[in-house]
Image 1 (cartoon, rainbow, N blue to C red):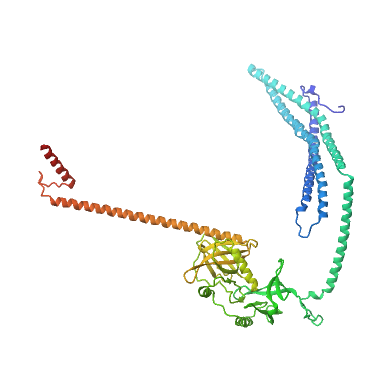
Image 2: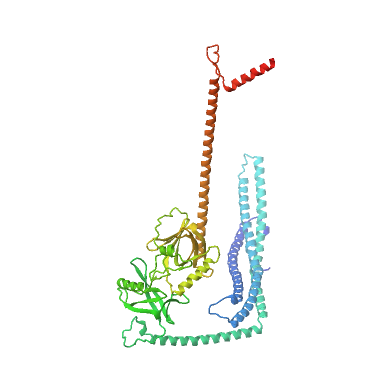
Length: 634
């Protein structure tokens, strides 16, 4: 190719300064080309990465459009037109995603591969040859200097031969390396042109193929479809602008008409007379709740009237709950130090006198409470009710603000001061007691669900909606219901008495357990207690089950230890009896020996003047020997 400078390979052996100077020029050109090629490679890599990202994002968009039918929007409804339109868009975008994927593959093959080969292979080869040439040149200089330092006076054939051999080897190596290095530099002048043109050619060809593929897929049908969709979007936008204008006008009218309603009270009561013909009234009221023995708190809640009933609804709740029947209620105003416009009402329904206060006045509350108590029949205590009356099936519901005949408080003060501090399981849950009912048997699996149904029905019949909050402490020994304010144990159930525990199938906050309780006449009965918790009722049931398992294993370990102790005691007792028997046998043997010795005549003295005492066995052997001797003589 004319116009390209080359290094003279035939001058490599001479290695003149002019050749080295020209080599430096080529090396500078190679360094500049390497720097430029690196920048161009990074730019093309960004194009390739962007194309891959575009292909992946287009495919994801198509997949999300296809899944629109599976989405459940609360306000969406069944918009079949919107669904079919998005499905058509998903089809087109999916085809575009395939086109982008083909373009990414073409860019990888036609654009990235040539420039990567030039950068990673050709340029690195030049750098490697440059390092090898520099090393061989340094070795040649060292060999020449060593040969030049040979002394003529002290000529040594061996040293001269080694120096000559070194010069020959180093010069040959330098010459060969230099020729390959010059050849690679000359070839690089051609490769750098192809390395710059081939990626650009591949990029343009890939883009042209992509445009052709897109024009083939884009038909007149799709053009008409896009035009129709554009018209629909403009119509929706005009409707939105009209609706926004109407809402703005409504806002302005509401601001003008409601300006006086922003104040908490009307400055001129005569301007707005009281309407006494309302059939429905709603708004927020502050209700006073007792939080301790002497403390209380105000809670802002939404109340409304419906069909002669006072309803209450909390924020976030879908529907309201019944508070009381207004037809049989009386309302009176009361004075309160920390609130204005306070009032209270008293309702007596189904033999239940119920007090709900928006303010707390000690003297007035005492008088209202006394009148409410006089209006109903007094109820016996919980202990007397269960020991003396003991009804077969009675629903017990505890509400802190009501007094009733068949509704009583099972949470009496417990005198059990046993501490479970040494238990390995301590879990505390916040629960609210709904009621309890005696059941015939704990074996049916749906006994707790049936009890829940009956207790909730009884609370609804008697309009009892308040519940007492307690802390349920689950340990390995027992279940405790603790007052959250005074930390006094209201009720204690041994963990071994719990027969069954489960939660409601639909409302997981409701749970209950069946336990074996001791009766007043020495017999036992089965009682089901129902609670509501802030947490998942299944977690509380799992905690109770874990406590029963730990208690069971502890009991088994205790029984095993007791059996081991009894076995050890029996073994020790057996050893003592064996020792006593051996001692008795030894004493009998000694007595028999003494008797045998005393029944024989006096023994003849020995030669030294002493007597020889024979044992029973020796005397019997000697007698047997004499009898055998007599028989042999006969």
